[in-house]
Length: 264
Image 1 (cartoon, rainbow, N blue to C red):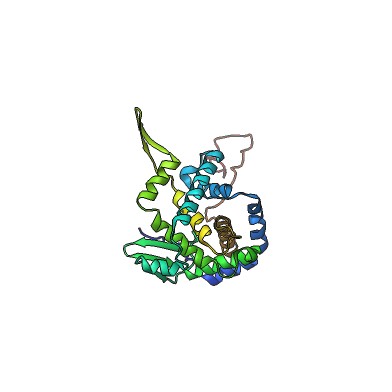
Image 2: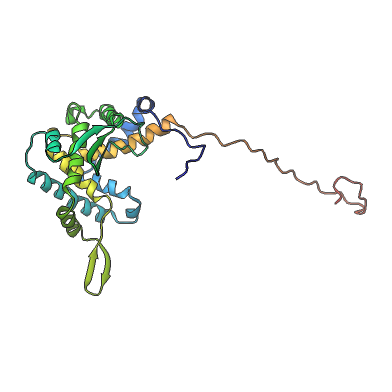
């Protein structure tokens, strides 16, 4: 895919953190309502952000979120207590690496790849998420440096929901994508796996007071505000097209006088 020459370069971590500092009050105001939402309602907000779900009812999204969160807790309860996520990853052939990059607009903290089996962490986005926790005054609930561990556990959950677990999740959500007579084909609920992974990570976290879902929603809101602060809308470009002038109305008289300036 070609890139337009006028595309803006991505923001650096330093630029985004400075913008977060400058817009701290706006971020706190935007995230204050999150304290009144249940985990299922927070999950529904993340699902609502998916374009495919824009027209679905709040009740349906909240029910899907509840199913996903319960499923994530079940996965966490069934997982062996390795005591250390890095040790678990190493024992299952998953490499954990860090990759420096400018902070992306979609706030990717980590990614899981299958070939090779790898969890990629983005330190700049990790740092931004930690700064959001401090800006919102959530440090007491989350404890010191929680985002890295939450991210690793989240990506481990992506590994766990492959295969039979994914089929069981689809069965519970019961989204019908095709029906022929009495036969129905169940579809994939986009974003459901993310909610399962958030729930799994929070269940495995030593900081049970902090909500992984609330942090995910807050991170998206804080990023939008910080990016808008760092890059305010540009003023409209100056128009080079002359402003049309009104043609004067000719006075009453002889219309055949072609020398007059308004004569056509």
